[in-house]
Length: 184
Image 1 (cartoon, rainbow, N blue to C red):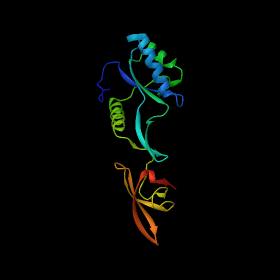
Image 2: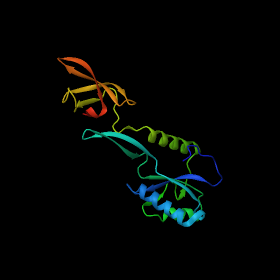
Image 3: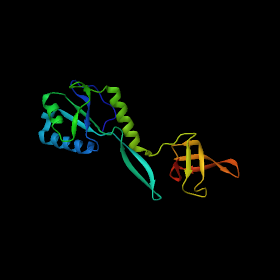
């Protein structure tokens, strides 16, 4: 998949609103319709932007995919009556995003940003839970289990936190991994 989109007359990106949880089903259905109808469809690409996220479950690191825009699918197409009807008649599609009944195309810059972001997040998984400095957490794993503390530093690239825990009445910095704490 290309990470840059060049302007081609009549070939633009549009956003389709889908029923919740039906994004992949709509994508597959549209891709099947495109293959059956050949080039008459004027639909070129169907995309559900996702990112990989890492989480720890039962002590094991798992990488899953999460959708950037739940309930939405991006479609590159030449908007005409045939392509509009093809999309609107797809099960799970509730409509296009736009003013009134006229779908509005995305800006080229917006599409390039979404494609770059999607590509970057697929190459390097981000943590599922986002922590912020000053947030309260409870330690659920390690030597300080059941202690509560406040986040002093966040290092998302390493998936580590520095938490200030009160030990003998004094704040003590403890370095922990994301999976070793939970938000209060």
